[in-house]
Length: 278
Image (spheres, rainbow, N blue to C red):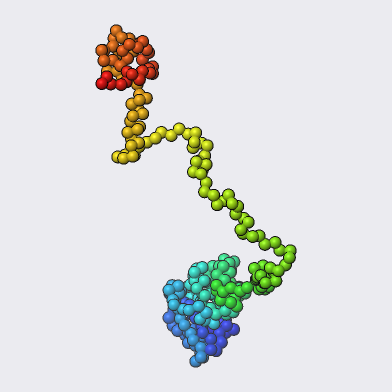
């Protein structure tokens, strides 16, 4: 009890963390001694280290946290345990921890958890037991504060923004300000409707596009395309000997009377031969 007398005072809220290896009689006597020091106005809570992370303590609840202070030294503190201890401690309050870790390792873990003023008060090299006191910073975890020069910068920026976008009636009577008449921005030619043919590019005009009729065409385009195909297409021979000459042609051959030609050669028939004899 002498080792923690400088931490515990009357009227404080104290949390005692113990492990499953602690003897019940020793733990009971230790709690009784702490309650005598805390007095009627104080509060002493008891928590097993294995249940610490499942506890429902609110942030900044305790003035002092004593962990693993019973003589058996059975507790092992993880990073999550240390983070929970710093959360439930009040700002600028201390905790006392005994742990199996080395002093350097335990100190590093306490720093990462958020503790300050870390001091190694005792260490047993043979049992590798380290006794450490640490303090929670004088602010709540997750709190924020503005930098000293931040307010001045924000005020100057707001003044410049307000000055930039604020206009008075005096700003429009200055003879040096030229105001553009919006009516002069549009010319007479802008009101004229353009010719549709002028909107087509030269590539569109010169490109040869194949016309294609819609399915179930009713505008007559399909019939025009069929007539063009019949007019431009060469007559198809049924015997395949038309190109050899009249000696090999039928009596109804459309090439009758024309000279022989090479197979696949395009032959232009006279118009009179494509008309029916009616």
